[in-house]
Image (cartoon, rainbow, N blue to C red; front, top):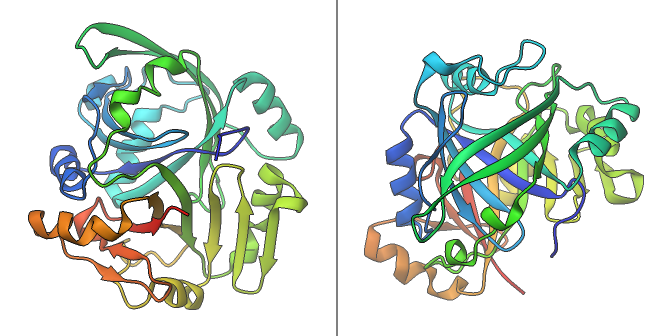
Length: 296
């Protein structure tokens, strides 16, 4: 699986207690990279894999809200508004190697955008030396169903992000393979998925809309389909919100059979899904279900 245009680049797990969530993911066998900071008042840490990653993010300095804002939109303030309501899967970033060209292509397909953001982020390499990541984002927040929102992400210095030393996780995880949303009526998301991925890569049924992003599956499932896939595991707590929102991240690992013994050491509770995958409940990982699958 090699990432390509609009493939899953990084789901964003948005939380209030950053340190607690980062420690929770460590107990699951991940090795988060060094803590970093955005210019607009958020702090973050990445779980890096070969072609994509998971970002843990939280507000650390609300006084910086407004920095790098575009058309009135501030990424940091958006994070703050999300955590005022809930925690969990706030946004999903899609891969781009040319943010401006990709932004123009998506807006031409009818997707509404809040604009482009260019920013720099101070960071540290694995050896502790300082450097600067340069990033361009194209915002495609869903105004009708705000919790199924995306942005395209262009890393101008990818060698500072995809660092081999950051990809060595004790649980062996090597990829985000799927992002799952729950939706009362999944077909309402069909046009959005089609705009990103085209008819050839999208399957639409009464209970599901599923797109092959080229680097992982993006799917919206009805409540019944969610139960069929994930069984009776508790869903993320979205404070009674019955609209469409993200519920699960699926990852793959060649060490699948060794996970139970790894988790037992850290007191992690898990269960087996109806399809034989391992599931970690939302209370143990930032209000998101983590699904571990065997890499074929």
